[in-house]
Image 1 (cartoon, helix red, strand yellow):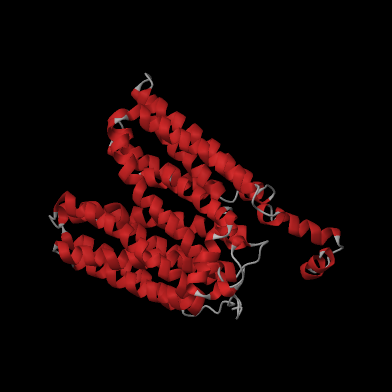
Image 2 (image 1 turned 30 degrees about the vertical axis):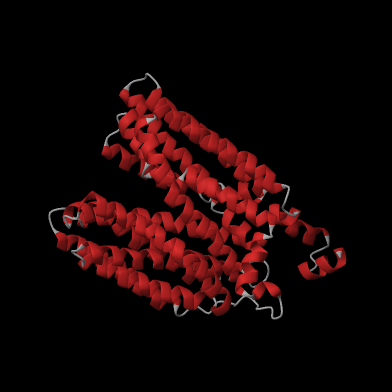
Length: 425
């Protein structure tokens, strides 16, 4: 791991640590501490999603033209200002404007950091780099949430101002860290039609594998992340009689499984086809939804229902650990030279769209229509398996299983990869 990659990983950990301070308490802060009500709190959460959907199409273009580092620094400063302003806001208008700035900054960070990881890694090291990123993000969120929970006081607005100030400080520290990164810049290929803003989107939409991956990504995020704090939690409370403290335990179990399993599953992932790894995630999540069905619809004891509900979140964590070294590197490998930022932004846009629609659909279903909710998302999970296997037919052998590139070099007696490619041509 080079110096640039080390700084990028430190940056991921710091940003996640800062977010962990505030994300779990945002609704309580707006609705209760500032006394703005549940409607305004709900609008704040919606503003995060809307801001991301607005800025991400432009972020991809900016990353391609300017490089990921300047875009990242601008996003960090915007997020820091949004976080600090949110901690000082007392009216609905300023809270919503601050949330828009924070949401836009957070959204742009994702593809910018992902593009920097792509630029600082090779096809062989990319899976491990993204696995490390996901590991540090979850660790930072968990530690930040734990510390924030001990600092927060729902009777004191100043304690929340402190939390948002710490979050803003983390973003500014990250500016200082990332400003020292000397990352290799992806080559800009002049004269290629795909370099034009409009044509780059047209080229992306003409890439069948990328379009299928975006559809698959939407279903993945809709059926998992989009349900964690909305439909699934509502289902657990209403159908399974789960307490709010148990919800926290379930989320902790999810994070713990990711932290423990991330590098244990990495060797398994690297030796297998990416499409089959994603297909296996669909099966694991189908089992998770079946276990959730038992928790709320079965006739066991409350202790069994609680154990089943926590196990559901743990199974989701296992699937996430399998996805982290698979999805992001695949997006990078599908991107033409110089357009990794565009492809990362497009995939982040799909993710944000799923995270915006998921709670809106899953929340009412999980709270009132318990059996249809479980059946629907179990079928969505099986759909992930089908979509992943179909995607595999659109990928080249090396895109689907990068280990093949290494094995070809070995069979050529250690010849450089370029020489092998030339010989094969």
